[in-house]
Length: 246
Image 1 (cartoon, one colour):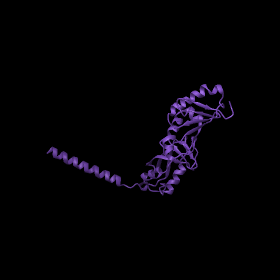
Image 2 (cartoon, one colour):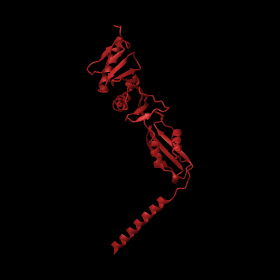
Image 3 (cartoon, rainbow, N blue to C red):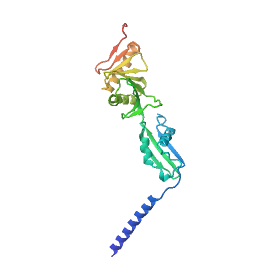
Image 4 (cartoon, one colour):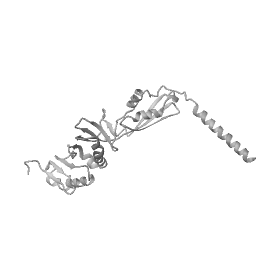
């Protein structure tokens, strides 16, 4: 008998909780959204998206929340719409009890800018995602020449990641050039030479060899002695002088 009573009480409690949850979720939030608060992470390092641009995108998609009832605002649709923008990596949208809609945006961080000879002009991040150049400028290395999207993702991203993680070479290398044979040349900030890098393999070893050459050879012969320094083959470094000079 006691067991039956307990079962009946448990059943009644379960029904109550289900009904209470149903009623709670069905309640309409008729408050009007008073403001939209947009937060953009890493905005001090890059400014590919702004709060004003975010508002413009939402207005264009008829998703701007201010003035709408809170229960009519679709946070998931706001997230999905903003994620379609190539410079945005992630979006979180949530409503606050005070009638404010918060949007937290994580923007993609550019690794390098691609300005290919075929007219393609875009940024690329460390994961190989393409970001439209638009009207923004980021302080990253620029790659020019005969660059296909596949070569940028598979080869140049590796090189860009190395430069990004090495303070010395990140400051020294200002441009990457790719010829029509997919061979890479690097243009440094200091020195009157071009670095013949070859293919994007053995990257760390090639830069170690080049660093040794910078430390031990160039201080002795002068930074303008060679017009080209080749590290294409990891077993040797070749300095090529301008024609007519000894």
